[in-house]
Image 1 (cartoon, rainbow, N blue to C red):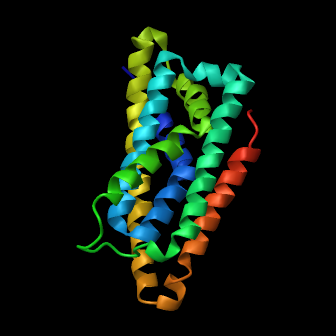
Image 2 (image 1 turned 90 degrees about the horizontal axis):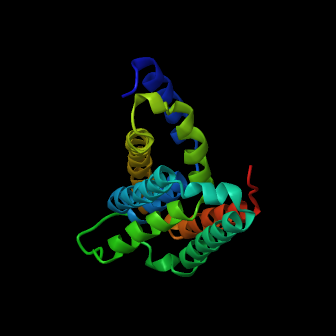
Length: 211
């Protein structure tokens, strides 16, 4: 459906975009540092599940609502900002309960929450929706087949690239968490960094403007 030249340009542009740190990557990194590689991998799956939601919305045209309506954009923006701030407050409040490295005693019931949080962090980032609506159409050619099928194919490529980068952050964050676990003095304070990162992301999201 796509010629080699167009696909190569898309992959190069997409790779440059997924490398840039954003709420998804920072969420994966902080989860990995605070709870280990397993939580990082699960959070990676969560944020990319959220990305699939954005791609689906783009394919059926729902994302145009965010572009056309200031109110819709602001509602999603402030819900997302509030959720990031909630994660920051929870990290600060529950700092002593954070596990820095995976262990057999780590409750498996925490992983669904990690996955769910990843989905919500991704979904409630309106700029992700606007990005897909603005970026993907640049590579769509109605003459090459159904537009929805092309959006889904390009979106899938973005998910694969995004997941690959997420996993790099997950593994790196897990290594940092292991390093901290051997330094109790630092480990006992790492939740301040995690909480601060989430609070900063929440504030940045709340103050962001639609372009």
